[in-house]
Every structure is written in structure tokens, then in C-alpha cells.
Length: 145
Length: 92
Image (cartoon, rainbow over all chains, first blue to last red; front, side):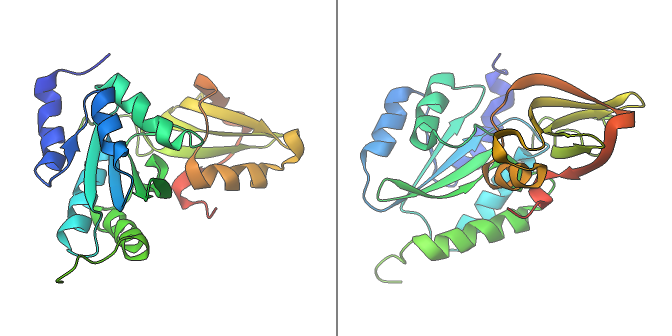
């Protein structure tokens, strides 16, 4: 059963203020994945503070470190936007569902996945470190940088 | 910011591996550790040798991406528990 939107909104905003597209419907997810060129980061957001409490700050720290970084950013909210989350998980259907989690795609292919159990109990810095390593391996530095 | 649950123990909400003194090994999200046992949510259990996989092989695979939820709730009796560790600390 979804939580109150009043509770969830600040957790959404932790990501949308970083430039994440808030994918609330299947159509939103289709649109996000419709563009397959370049790199795209998808965060499966969650209310659970045990893990998500470090996931979102970790994502922020990784992105605020600058280039290289993914070309596009999107997020679905597990337990809240059910259709959108199911649609998004269809793009990595071989991986057991977990939230929070972070998926990086390159040219439409999944190239990196950070499941919940690799976030739990770790610091934002440690999560950011893993993400930065994935960005360095898979994301190009934007022209002019 | 997030939803935190107090007084449930330091492993509450953490995905753990519970090895037993017998053939079974469990992975799930730890709810509570009580005198009676370890309560896991959204987990799975493996018996040594099933599918041609040892406990270690099964856990190593689980450590990469997690496990598919087969059970909503699992209870591992205290007298069967050999060890509890975080799945995230298992090298895949």
C-alpha cells in the first residue's frame, strides 16, 4: 500500500532537484527508455531509510562530482508508482527486484547494477564511490570539458 | 530522510545470509533477531547440493544481484543458526 504523498514528496525531490526525471507512469518509463543512445541512470527509489537513506545522498554525491556522468537521469518510486516501477524493472528482468537500487544503461543495455544489499549499511561516500567507478567506466565526458 | 524502525536491532532492514548447522542456508531481509530465532522477510532458502550448487556457490551468486523472493517470512531457529552476515559483505 503506497505511503502518503506528503511523506514521499521530499524523497522524490532529493532526486528531482538533481535533474532526475520523475517517471510516474508506464508511459513515462517508455519515453525514458525510448531514447537508447548514450548513457542513462535509473534510480529505483524507496521509502526505507535503512538503505534508501544512504542511496539518495550517494547518488547526489556521485553526480555532483562532475564529469563523467550519465547523459540522462530517471527515477521510479517502488511501492508508490507501481506500474512505472514494474515497467522499469522489465528492462532488467533477470535481476531480482530490490529497492532502492541503481541501474546504469549504455546504448539501451544494462551495464551496471547496484542492488539494495550493496547499499545497506554503507555510507553515502561508499555508494558514491561505486557509482563514480561505473560512470568512469561507461560514461563519456561531455564535449567541451 | 527515510522511514526508520527503532528497537528492531542493528540488522533490521539489512539483507543477511543466515547459515545453519545443517544443510540449509537462508538469504533475506532481517526483521528481528530474537531469543527464538532470526526472522527474515522476502527471502529464499537453499539446501546444500540442490541444483548442483553448494551453499557457498549459491551465496556467491546471490551476492551479485540478490535473491528472488520465495517466502514472505522465514524463521531460522536460534539453535540452528551457525552465523549471520550481511549479504553485501560477501564477495561475489
